[in-house]
Amino acid sequence: MEQHGYQIVCYVVGSFVALLFASYAFTYGWWWTKKQDRNQGTEDFVTARASQSMLRIGWSFYAGAVGSWAIVTPSQYASFAGIVGVVVYAQSCGLPILLIGYFGGQITRDMPHVFSLADFVGWRYGPIAKTLTFLITMFVMCIFVLAEYTTIGTIFSDFVGSVSYGIILIIGALTLTYTAYGGLAVSIATDQAQGIASMLLALVLVIYVAVTYRTPLPQPLPENLGPNYYGFISIFTLVASLVGSTMINEAFWQRVWASADTRTLHGGAVIGYCAVVLLIFLSGFGGWLAFAGGYAVEGVTNANVYLMQILGDKSGSSLVNSWVGVLVVLLAIIMNEG
Image (tube, rainbow, N blue to C red; front, side):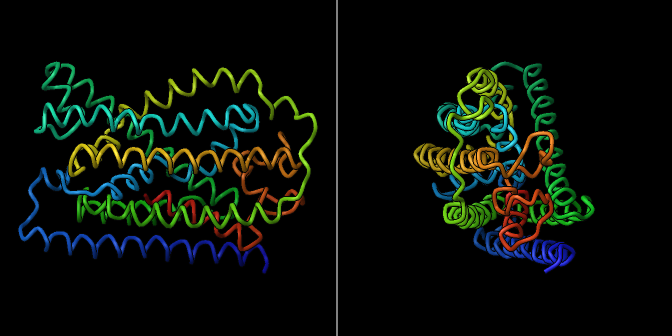
């Protein structure tokens, strides 16, 4: 199949997958409303108070933490921070989930009536702190959303070879519509389905690389891939930045209020932590292998497609040209919609 054919496949199949998850969300939203046997109140719509199981919370933490950026950024970081940077990046993405699970349990125990991080800060520290927290959380969430849609657009422009705005409009419209229809409960239910699907696709890609990657690793390792200054300094800089930004992100704290009880929250946080650390490590390690095997070359290969290079040959093509490349695009769409 020619590259133009793969473009069509990526758009058609990708749009179908996005629509499939949206259909599931609308169906679940209808069922959830009927199960409640009443119209949702504002608080129920926003918090899904104490209604979600451990597995749902765990998958929701995972789906909320990873997005299409998880395919691009860890592999870029591996190109200069080395194997230490890959490990630290994975841990830095998972650690905030454990912290939110722990502190969130304490908050819901002592102040069960709060429904947001800003609301808790308001009860504890007053209206000025509440307003500042609200403004910061809104700013952080806007940055997260912009980063997500920018990344999926970049993947389609640099890897699929098409315009970037088409897929952004499709995913943005579908996600906004089903979330507005069903509220947080529907979003969490969809997170579970998207999380499981993304893990299955990631497993297929891991098996593919394990079977096809036969390039011997360079001995000794180049400075950019082995333990180096950037990897060691990331133990502070990356942990501080990712933990700080995630802890102030209201999207993660929503899982606290939705958990059935403290045990559910703690268990869900552990599940989310493990899933996030695993996926981010695999993504970063894939980029590391691409450089170690000569599939990607700094300054030559497009930095947005480092990970994708390990799935092809050493031709240097940055555009999708195989079925496994299509799977990467589908993985990005699923994680982006979550």
